[in-house]
Length: 317
Image (cartoon, rainbow, N blue to C red; front, side, top):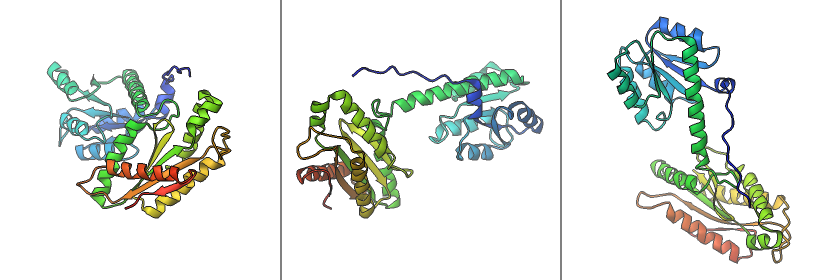
């Protein structure tokens, strides 16, 4: 199989502007009016005059793509606001541009030490401001794209094992905190080795892509995750899901793949691609690790395969 070159799509200034939200933090009404007239034609702008409002707006969905922050504020200073934003995982990746009338080099250096991406000295010229904003938005989007690639399986373009590892840890902790059940469904394509031997690895890759595409659509809720964890094996994490819900989802998985009608003449006693599914459900305890859920689902998957495949098996409690 040939490796495909990964390229970063061109992002025009107009494309960046159309999709971008700015949060402007300044206590000076005249300065806010300046920003309103200078930026609102290109960007969706929110305005905050206090530290409390600034932090609240930065945390609310949809979050700003970039924050313009005055250094001198009446309650908390801009540096302290920036520090709080950078300490919060929810807001730490939002680019911050300081805008201030203070030209002291030590002040500027402190701003960069706190994590700002730029420091603009007032009075600000609109063309310069727009150019700087556009540049930092492009850089932020490209950084986000590169980061997202690290969490995607390059063949199927669904989340990979790295994303699975982080998600299961997060959802396991959430389940403990709220005393909720969590379900894991392990999915394995039946007789995939024989499929590859019969049709070739190129067709095998096409099969993986098609199966992954259709199963990925089954992880519809926030907190759910569908990922490829290796070879022909996939996993579906279902947060706040009981045994009945997990069984219903497993049946949906099996039916979805069956309806694809992908021929598999290499499989004994099967004329199309099917999957076997292992289900495990738990109410996690602090003393337990998510590996226990995976091991239970893996054992159930083994039982499903030994029972004839194209079916699911439920882990024993």
